[in-house]
Length: 167
Image (cartoon, rainbow, N blue to C red; front, side, top):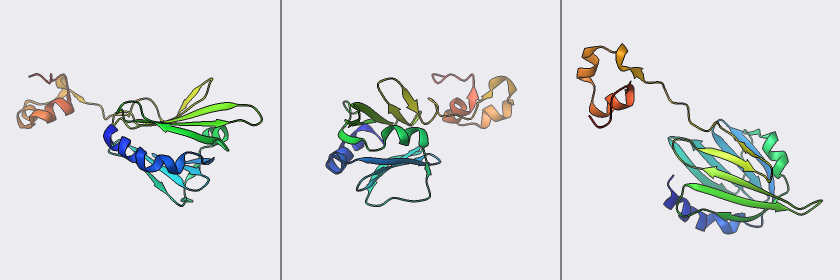
């Protein structure tokens, strides 16, 4: 999902989310469900299928993310923003009882490192490691001459370590 599509999507869903209370945050593999008082926000963080959509109902086969749910339960969504056209979405929330607190959910839709983060005044918790694990490349030292001859231009760079893109 690029920043332009995210900007257009925010225009459609912002009014429905602002003013809602967060009830729970749940996860199933790289899918995250944020339950609000009236609807659910689904976030796909699969590098090959990044996306975001709002639904009227919740799905029950997701596992609760206790560490994040406890930090945001009953918080009121004050705003949703995107800086420039970056593929990063920020959901600002606050709670005023028993003490005033502010929390931010940050959704990152970069294909190399999609993530769901919870940022408080004192810390930031990321759901996934910073970088997506990639399949290690084969070293140029360990491949046969025949494999080099039959590989395509992009295949050489993507599959073999030690091949320069500029060649």
